[in-house]
Every structure is written in structure tokens, then in C-alpha cells.
Length: 176
Ligand SMILES: Cc1cc2nc3c(=O)[nH]c(=O)nc-3n(C[C@H](O)[C@H](O)[C@H](O)COP(=O)(O)O)c2cc1C
Image 1 (cartoon, rainbow, N blue to C red):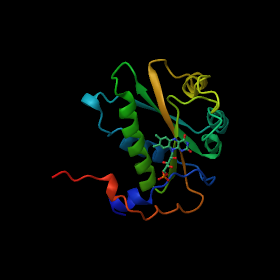
Image 2 (tube, helix red, strand yellow):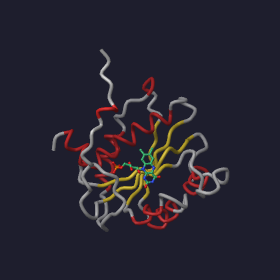
Image 3 (cartoon, rainbow, N blue to C red):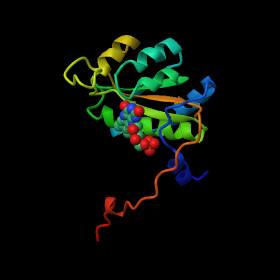
Image 4 (cartoon, protein in one colour):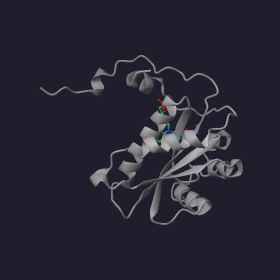
């Protein structure tokens, strides 16, 4: 598969088979993600791998919307950033998470980004408890680390839907 075919084949995957993801595969994906560019090369992104079903269940409860499928994933990677190292820790995390998702795709896995930072636990109570605080407490994450997102991953149950054919030409400007 060419790189262009790879990025076009990737879709968010929220349904996984029971096939476990080997530790060596997870390590290879994280090794790819660790090559991500970062502001001033601070390499502020950190990862936590979770495979325990009970912990995955509790992670899935971090929000009452858009995270429930994490309980059925064989693995999830918590993407965190050192907030003391740089004010751009979120940007650095986002690039790492993207490379992580593409590396997973290249290895035949499906994945989905589940947002954490700035998201409330309850959709209808945006000022209430935050998903990030819940996760930090659940996973004993040091205060210095912000949590941008969780990437759920596993072998996809079913084929991803292809991207819709559409005219995106108004999203690109070629400046003369
Ligand atoms: C910043 C960001 C936050 C996202 N948050 C969630 C989320 O909380 N829950 C979820 O199911 N999907 C989430 N997604 C996945 C998007 O819904 C998905 O990427 C988008 O609908 C496009 O579909 P595709 O990934 O299949 O191309 C998120 C994606 C990004 C980039």
C-alpha cells in the first residue's frame, strides 16, 4: 500500500474483534509515534498502554458520550504531554497520536481517537467534572502530564467505509 492509499484507507474504527494485540505490535506502533516532530524537539509526549478489560471499561466511562466503545477494544493508548516542558504539549500530542493511528493502520489495526482534554464527563454539564481529571485519578497519572486523548485500537470487525468522493477544492488555496 502506498502512503496515499494508507491515509485514504484509514477510518475511525469503533468495533473490534476479540483478537488481542501483541505487545511487540504495540511497541512497534509506539516506536513510530515517538518519531513525531515536536516544538523545539522537546519530545513532550508520553504514552500509557492499557489492556486490562476492567480498566478499559472504566476508561470508557470517562464521558457519557463518544467513549463507550473503548470497553470493547483490546487496547487503548493514553496520549499525554509534559505540560512543564512546553506550552505546545497539546500540538505535540496531536501529531504523535496521528502518527500512532497511521502506524496502527499500516499494521492492519483499526483505531479511534477519543478526546479527553477540555471535555466534561457529562455532555449536559460542561462545567462539571472533567474527563481528564477522572482519567488522571483512575490511572494515577502525575499532575505534570496533561491528557489530550485516548486512542482505542484493535483488529477491525468489518471493513472500513471508504471516504466519500467529494469536491474539496474550496478547502485549498493556491496563492499566486
Ligand atoms: C480531535 C479529535 C477528537 C475526536 N474525538 C472523538 C471522540 O471523542 N469520540 C469518537 O468516537 N471519535 C472521536 N474522533 C474521531 C472523529 O469522529 C473522526 O475522525 C471523524 O468523524 C472523521 O471520521 P474518520 O476518522 O473515519 O475519517 C475524534 C477525532 C479527532 C481528530
